[in-house]
Image (cartoon, rainbow, N blue to C red; front, side):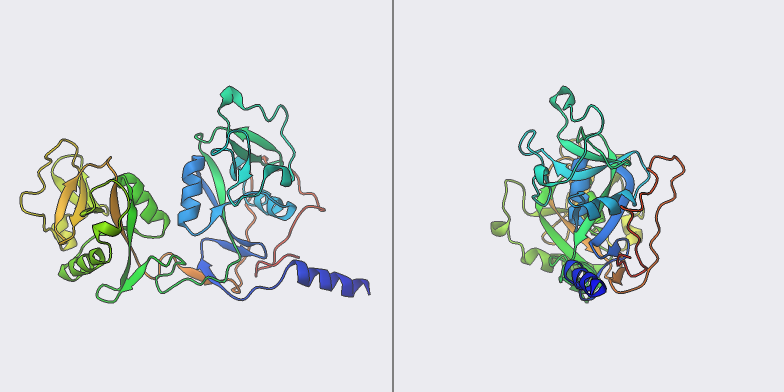
Length: 338
């Protein structure tokens, strides 16, 4: 009878989800998909990068989430998605869970809101919390809850990426303007890069994409007849190359609009494309629309039912506490809990 009861609880608490594909750089578990980012970032960049990857910045909102997160990193602490960046000292996770509903234990002398500037929450390797500055970079974990949303032909759940048979590539026109560096950041996080035009066929694709986004449908106060693409003036020396280091001639397309590039106002060192697919030089630090491209098979996607080994990181600096057998979660190769 006890065995049957345990089986029923397991089925209802941890339902077996249908097979769904997502990025292979995320680890699938019965909780969802996880990815540990060891490279530190500010809280704002971490939140944005997770969002662009199709996930959210992970928060230890349940004991199970907390245990998995603690098993995933070795650093003294990581950012969580718990923040008070919108309403001072009133903390919520990025998915809306109030802080008082999140099990937590503060580290000694925390929280202290030092200099009235600590609006983000860090998770320590011993499982305790502290309030920290959001602009001080830390590692973090992205989390994608279980979803029935499948990746499309472009290898992403983002419906704004569209496959073009003329080039065998996928493209996304971002109407929310960003600076050149932030546009490049967004494209990279989505698994692609700022678009590079390689031939006349691709130039036609760009013109066709533009027709779907007339200026009247683009919201905001910015110039709507140009968009950043993947080229810029290396070293401000009139050496226009792609972001992958090729000259425009080597890349296969080097058509500037008549009279361009002219650096009409100092600082036009970043590349853009007009609606007619001719190039222009633009100010790198001003905000414009931009076009991303990605290969359909990158980043690779994996089936949630595929067996892949779970690797608990080996910590050489003894920052993680010794495992507590009551709290430790072991994962089978298919991501389920033992």
